[in-house]
Amino acid sequence: MDPGEVLLIVSRLSIEGLAAFFAIMLWSKTRDVAWMLMVIGTIAGYVETVYSILDLFGIMGEQLSIASVPVAAILLPNLRTGFFIAAFVVMVVRKLRRR
Image 1 (cartoon, rainbow, N blue to C red):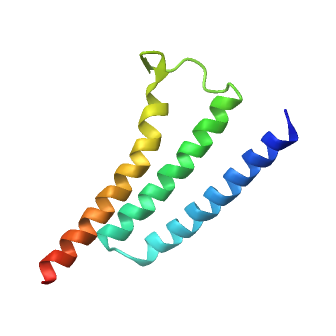
Image 2: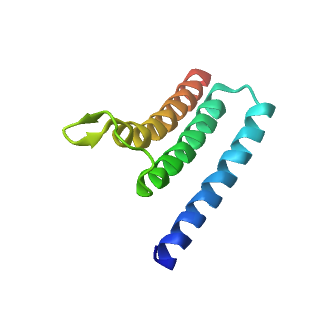
Image 3: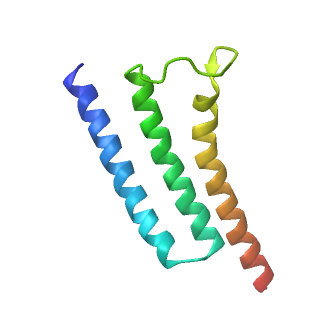
């Protein structure tokens, strides 16, 4: 494995892991729906990173596929963004109701 790939893997795991750690800490301190959705989106991002690294190493094995693309590879990146969208919608609706 190329040293650049190792650096990429270590940096992704450490940055996403740090973000997930602080997100979990925030989750224990707040019960706000919008923030909880942001936390879940951040954790989903970490799961996506771990999945992509395991897939890179060939550990995932046979996977359920749609048109030769693994379902997890389609679902995980979109799941993260979906939680962020839901959090933003909650924030926008909350601001519009205050008017």
